Image (cartoon, rainbow, N blue to C red):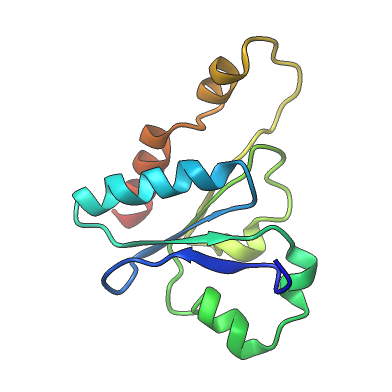
Length: 129
C-alpha cells in the first residue's frame, strides 16, 4: 500500500481496460476480470487504496499503473464516485453510490447499486464498444 496503487492482477495479454477498486470491491473486480477473459477481453485490476500516496509517486510509476494510452477504465467504489474522474479519464466510467438511505440486507443493497460481477462486466464491455 505504500505507493497508493498497484497492479493486483495483470492480464495475460496487453490489457484493453483497467478495473480499479479500493478495498471490498477488489474481489468483485477479480471475478469480473475472469469473466471478461472468457469473452476475450484483457483486463488489468488495480487496487488503489490511497489516492494521496499514489499522487506522491514519480511519473514513471504512475504511467506503469495507468498508461496514458490505456484510457478505458472502470472504477468501482462502494461509496461516492467523487474524485474518480481523474483516474478513469473521459473514456472511462464509475460504478458508485450517488444517494443515501437504502435499508435492506447488505447483499441486496449492493446488487441494487450495481455492485455485481455481471454489472461490472456489462459496464466494461460498454466502454469497449
